[in-house]
Image 1: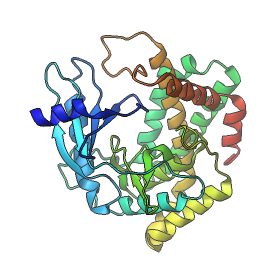
Image 2: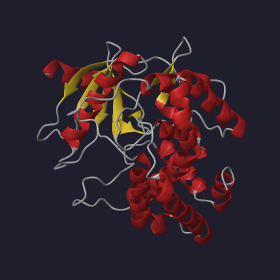
Image 3: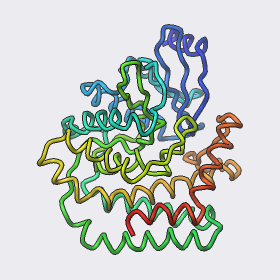
Image 4: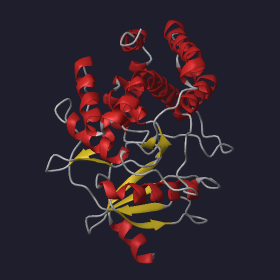
Length: 328
């Protein structure tokens, strides 16, 4: 343990791109994924073990880094770490490498579901569960984050339409798989052989694979990371989905196809409310009573400015209307 901690201290700290974790490249080529946590955060150890179990469960698909070691959070050292193989590569080039992303998602989604007793969470009704998350986020953050009353009304209208849809869709059986939940293209690394590796396993659960397909291609996702910054056409999104469906078998594809658009709409709302929380909580003073409050203090000024500009763009009425035009 002492040797690993020393290796982390001597490693190269990589630029932070999020609020939940950072990375240190070790001298032996491996990567330390550092889980951020504040003092007295009771969820730090649980979150670390969930990520570790996700790395272990997805390893057979060979499209995620290999986990080597878990360093526990301890008193006085609340942030734990995962030591994984470092993947040399870059962010995907869109739309040219959408097929590589589709191949990776098909491989990961085809893995067996976790056995009973696994710490990996399970959503038996992903439509209803996702809508609940959206509604909770809207209640807490929408009014504070979106000051344009017209833009806010568009988002609220979409939530209401999803509530109406839930009266029929939420009662229908939905195909389940391992779901990654944060599949924006910046969380993929394309290696020298053109293979796309998924590297952010923080939110892995059993749920709807349609969420991952949506999150990989929605405009709110494809412009999030500065190394990507590409809005896909409907034809490009359609090609991505068909490439994925062709790899999972006819029966599975037929079960999933009716859910692609409903879950895409919900995923857009979920990502929009995610950004509302980001805006509200990162701009607010630190609340010692809320260890779950997000902070962007670890980001470089350039990354912080980029993400804030992306969030502001996503709340513009023209952006919202252009996205909703896809299905309304």
